[in-house]
Amino acid sequence: MSKKIADEIMAGLREAIDYVEGRRVAGVRVWEIPPSAIRAARQRLALSQADFADRFGFSVRNLQKWEQGAARPSGAARAFLTVISREPRAVMRALKSARPAGRASMAKIARRRAGHAKSRKPMR
Figure 1 (cartoon, helix red, strand yellow):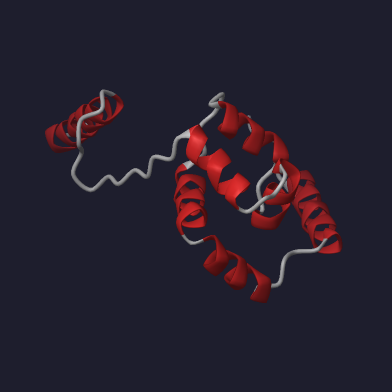
Figure 2 (cartoon, rainbow, N blue to C red):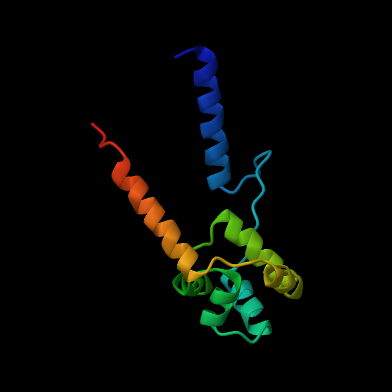
């Protein structure tokens, strides 16, 4: 391994440690949304957990975990939840015009993935 590559790996490790320890890292943006804000956004819309999850494309179980603080949403989900909490009507308008994947489409995707997995060669 060249010295340049080793130095880049070390720099990346230092950035990861800084991030984990709460220090700012150049080029990294994190949207934090506390469990209470997720719950408050849902309650402002007067939606049950099931209705909120269905409307915005989350699993009910994940939403429950997020609201309880037992799990943190992924980066993309945190950003989406932030937008929902600040501009819920705009998000609902945007999603209303989008065509959601129906159950038939999801089943077709699952079958395609299953067929693809079977066609793969086993790893040695």
